[in-house]
Length: 132
Image (cartoon, rainbow, N blue to C red; front, side, top):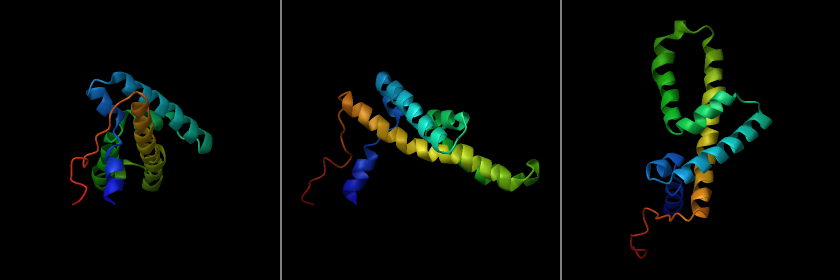
């Protein structure tokens, strides 16, 4: 379990590489992720391109947007929208599904691009004595 957690924490966002000065890695990751996610989701189920753009650019912040809708907008303004079930399905289909799919594809793609570009990966628990 500890080993699996180490591998998961090694998967960084493309924004991590952007803010640490590795802009080429970040841009390549965004481009390849966009192509992969767009191709897979549009070919398989026909998702909206806007959901994909939001998913790639917002990364983890998109989950906060969905949480704001779920916790604030939906319960306190139910009469604001006509057909609450339809709006919920739109949020799931065009925001949450692309976000979740893109989140994992983005992390995996960024990992492999960074690995190919020679970035070193220090796992958070590498310094811990392996005998303990």
